[in-house]
Image 1 (cartoon, rainbow, N blue to C red):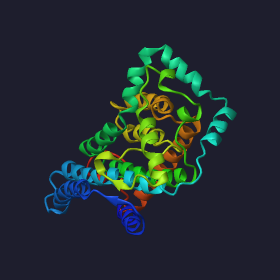
Image 2: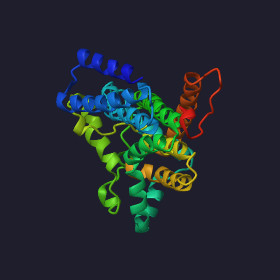
Image 3: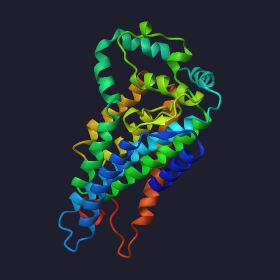
Image 4: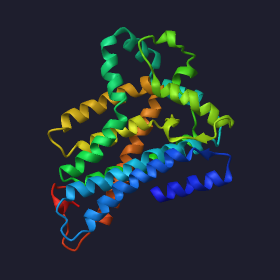
Length: 303
């Protein structure tokens, strides 16, 4: 999947006006290559004495490559510039009885809610890194691989849907200004508001790893991530309660931090469940052995 995404990006660079700042991408490939080389070397050695280490390095190599590559793909997809669907998404929210302004006002009145909500919303990257490193270290090699597979599948599906149903966010559609939410800093929404219009009108065609941000609105990838992380950490009984509570809070924070509609969140949940199901099917197919290995038990047999 990573190779396919890279192929699409290369083809887009050749056939469009997009161009990259090569230094950042070279650094990403170099770091991923180092992790991959050491991980593969350990996996292919006769001794295989440290599976937790070399499987962790392989997973980390895939993560280092996956994040900037998939974010780059979202920029290229956004440039297709189909008509914005914010009015339709807001209408769907209202049909469901969801009032974003009420949620916003409630949060403004209860300032004590803002720090934990902001922390959970901003944990999307640290949680992905933690799961990538932690799962192999405690012996859940297959769960680690399935999580990264589900991540890639979810990015691809989210990118396709968001290309067909582009949107900027609920703050702008409701005509809200920073004075309407003085206690909240919707960083995800501001990043989309900054980059998406420029990508859509052709003003932004330079792709730099250090300046890329999320530009997808529907479905919400924060909602995807909340479900994905809750599932990834579920086998760890000592982490499970915290992971479930923390990622439930991320779901609540997603409309506020990213300017998302409720339907963005619901669609993200559906995408996550589908990606997890597909990743598990891929995992089952790729790990079949005549002896019938256990599904997700810790230890070397869970590979």
